[in-house]
Amino acid sequence: MDDFLSWLERGPFAEVIRGTAYLYPVLESIHIIGIALLIGPAAAFDLRLLGLGWQKLRVTTAANYLLPLSRLGFVIAAATGVLMFLPAASLMADRGSAPWKLGLIMVAGLNILIFHRGTYRNVAAWDSGGPSPVAARMAAVMSLVSWSGVTVAGRLLAYT
Image 1: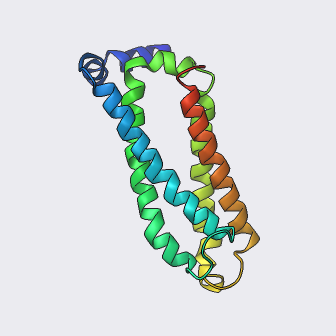
Image 2 (image 1 turned 135 degrees about the vertical axis):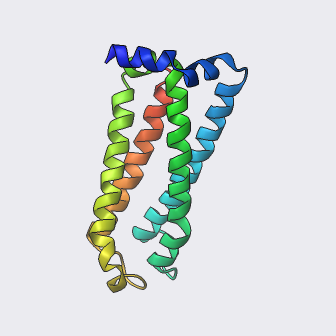
């Protein structure tokens, strides 16, 4: 693994990122924008599933407006995250928070997959009016917890 991480650090992208003034802070800024686009709309959707959002708004309407923004935010955050990882791959991989961040991203992704392949397939039955089913509310809680954890672990990468 150390050889692979060293290879990443010596790669052309890592060299450009290290050698270009202000590129790393620009990547960090774009990464934060991506995180905001990912977590903000996802949290609003989760709150709607939990019954804390505007109940008159159909779940499918909320999903159609909010989730594409979350997907865009994920692409931006993932791409910039990988680019920021490259110049110091060995150092970042040794940080205690790195496995937590990656693990929580996987938990969040699995949660999304289970929700959309399971509970959301029957959304027509609970799209408006009443409360979301327990499975949808559990998915919402898992989403809020896992994405919050990803954010905390990401911040800790700079310190631990």
